[in-house]
Length: 190
Image 1: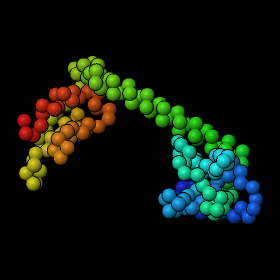
Image 2 (image 1 turned 30 degrees about the vertical axis):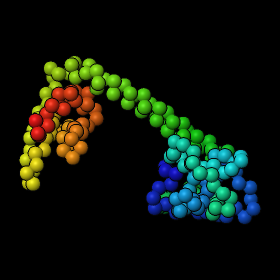
Image 3 (image 1 turned 180 degrees about the horizontal axis):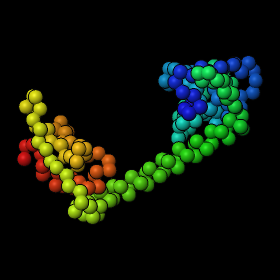
């Protein structure tokens, strides 16, 4: 439920005591699947109770049984101040912009990641920047005698060879300027 709640906050929870459970209410319930208490917002009541955290991109997989609801959160104590926690339609309206942002962020990330993969495989950026950007390959012998390979750009390590996996680990966004086909020929054994 971040950013509404953060670690160390105190929640004031009241039992429903026969009151109507509403969409948008923030509840504390015992999750049978995770065997712990969870604080999430109710997003659906038909035919079962479905919840979602305000910082989660998706609705929770498992429905909540009414007998597992411990109560409704009505306020949060943050250090020196108390903040009311709204349920119902107003609670949904406060959570909706966050959920929308998370969905857009996920979709944007997926799209940009595909562009990044295309550009790194095509070598377009590498060819454009090859005159200005120079990387250095270093062979370093560890205390146990194994040879470690790293690629540096100035003072920054941008890639390391992982002998256990027999592959290179390249930091983002440097895959755009490193030719992985060339690196596959460069191993400590070669």
